[in-house]
Length: 144
Image: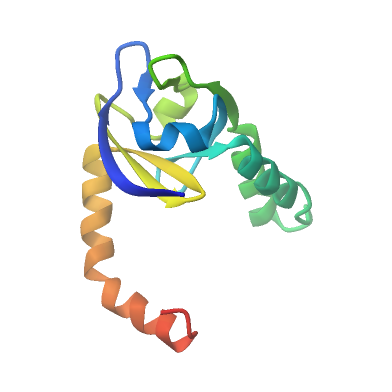
């Protein structure tokens, strides 16, 4: 399970180190793609296969669904974890996420998100302000 928030540096060759505690579960190969809110998603291969199967089965008649599926699947790239625990982020994904030098990798149960550090800090502040409202809605659903 991936949990926690880790600050890492993107090097000049677009490589980023995966947190050591995530590497074993991630394996030697993974899939990275566009995420939401200008983040990137990093999936273990097994989890990505499940996600891709669900995306591939979504109806293509609705333009919003079609657009989302296109962005997720066409944006996906297989990555290998090198001996130092790094992955290479493709240029088009670096541009999408507006990644600079300082980044944050968040563990989100079965996947990771990669954010530009300032964008994550801004997003987190907004989310923290709304956490009580979200918790109440989850409580109404019996989830929290």
